[in-house]
Length: 349
Image (tube, rainbow, N blue to C red):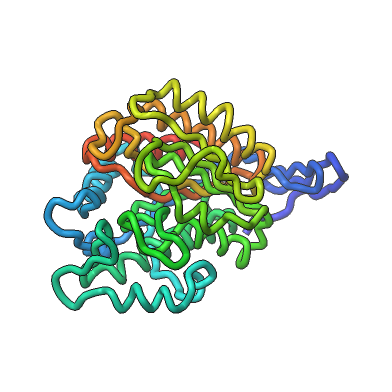
C-alpha cells in the first residue's frame, strides 16, 4: 500500500502527489509518472506454463514445442533476471465464451483426442495435452491484463502456445484454437472497465480471427502489418470494419525500412487517434528474414523498434499498460533472438 505524504488536486491540469508517484490529470485521463522507488517496483511480467509444451502437433509441424524451449533458453540469460515470472493460470471458460460461443468451445473440447492426434482443420492439430495448453495460453493473457490493469506490473509478455490470432469466433484455423488476444480485450472491458482496447499485430500472417472478432465494434481497434499475398488471404487495406480496422499489407521481399514506413504512416497515426486505454500485442516473429513460412526480411532491430513505438503509444494513452502474447515465428534461432529483443525492450519501459 502507498502511504499518503501529500495530497492536492486541481483540474484539469493539476497533480495528485503520493509517496513516489505523481498522477497528472489531463482531460480527466490519468497518466502515471513514476519516480524514485516506485519505478523500481514496476516490472515486466513473464507468463508461461509447462503445459504449453504438451500441445503436441506431430513430427515436422512448424508450430512445435521446441519454439517455447528456444524462448525459455533465451530468457534464462542473466539480463532477464529482473523479470517477474509466473505460471499462467487456466482461463475460466466464461471469459473465453465472451468471444467464442459455448457450442464452439464444446466442439473444440470434444475434438481433443485421448491419444495421438486429431486435425481440426488441415493445419490445426491437437493432442491429449492441447486442452490444458490452450486454457493456459488464454489464461496467460487474462492474467497479464489483470496485473497490468491493476498496476502491479508495467507490462507483460506471454510465452505460450498454441497461438491465437487466426481463431475466429466459431472456427479454429492456422494453428489456433481460441483467440487469446481478443478474449483478453473483451476481458479488459468487462472486468476492468477499459473503454477502448487496441490490438497491434506484427505477425507476418494477417490475424483474420482478431479482425473478425472486432469488425463491428468501434471501441476495439485492430492494426496489422503482414505479408500479402499469404495465408490466410485476408488483410487488404479496404477491410476497415467500422473504421476500427487498419491493415498495412507488405509485399514479399519487403525489408525493415518498408515495415517501419508502413507502421509509421498507417498504423501509428490511427492508433494515436484511437487513444486506447490498453494496448495488446500479437507478437509474431515470423516476419524475420530467416523464417521459413514467409518472405519478409525483418531483423531483430526492427522488432526492437516496433516494440519501442508500441510502448510510446501505451505511455501516451494508457499509462503504459501493454500486454504482448506470442503468435508465430518458426525459425528457432530467429524466434529466440527476436523474442529476447522484444522482452528486453519491454523491461526497459
